[in-house]
Amino acid sequence: ERSQPPSASLSLAPPPSFLAALSTAISIAVSAGLSTMLLLCFPLALVSLSAPRDEVSFDFGWRFTTGLSTHPAQSDEPPPASADPGLHPAEAQTGYDDSGWAEVQLPHDGLIAAAASSAACRDGCSGKSYIPRHVLWYRKAFTLPAEWAGSLLFLDFEGSFRKTTVWLDGELLAAHDCGYTPFRVRLDNATSLRRRLGSGDSAHTIAVFVDPDNGDEGARSHGSGWWYEGGGLYRSVALLRVPPLHIERDGLFAYSNLSWYASGDMEEEGEQEGEQPSGGVLHASAAVANAGSSAQTICVAFSLSPPGGGRLLAAASTAAVSVPPGGRATVSLALSVAEPEVWSAASPHLYTVHAAVMQSGCASSSSSSASAS
Image (cartoon, rainbow, N blue to C red):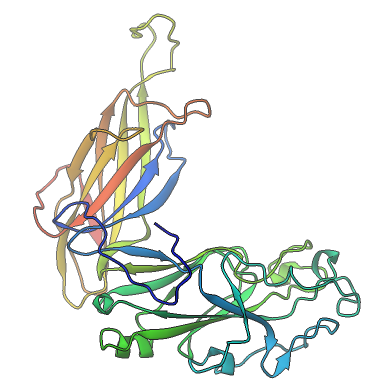
């Protein structure tokens, strides 16, 4: 469940397990409707009892303002020529008083509420909207469960327009320039979080500075268009916790090859040649990362569920492979399916591939391959 009530704290109960022996698990929806390539591939978080994987909405509990503490935004004045907040701005510090800032939730356009101003936008500003593109600040206070100590923690930003800088407890973590691409910020290696998580003091503050300037007309040099593009955290943000041994972001991939009945092999009256595949082979791979301090021997169990769920159509595990500390391993195998249902706009049949990292019960498999680095 991604959403949560507006709250400054994150209190999470352990999620249900997928398999008792699993270290982590994720699934993707897979279409078997292409003859050579997979069209749809997107990750969904699953978890196991032994090593939970949590994704929590970070959309609530934000405070927001425009301008800098040293240069407050004025509705009828253009933004300053230089709006750089510096490496250690007051707004990013834990003790900064943001009680006067507006309370907002994401997704949020930090510009649209401003009144149009020909004085502030003498050339019309982006998209000829006459809405001044003042710099934006977001802050959010939160706490983390003590049992998350030793895990990898990330903030996933689905979209922020445009130039975005992120601090945690006053420590500069990351910057991202493109307003049209998602980005990830790692939290667990921040000094304050490493020192305090699990010690009983788990209160933190995330601060995000967004400069939405893209020039009066928009330009390739600003990475934007000529239309009104808004500004700020215009997409959702999620907090992700994974164990040190985990499937990497976008690390699960699958594609299919289909075989078709030859002419004269159709059993049902009215079927045309090439309409029904006789079988399919699903090629699945998973990239497993090991952020721990010692090598881990793992395998990955893949299974395939039919459209609508129900019994598994196929399942197998890869051969065991050793993942070095700080390294990764990619494992793969093939699953065969008889007479798969073809995807089409009229009949959008989607199969689901499950991939689970296992540290016990690994058996050799002639259909698997693995590479480690």
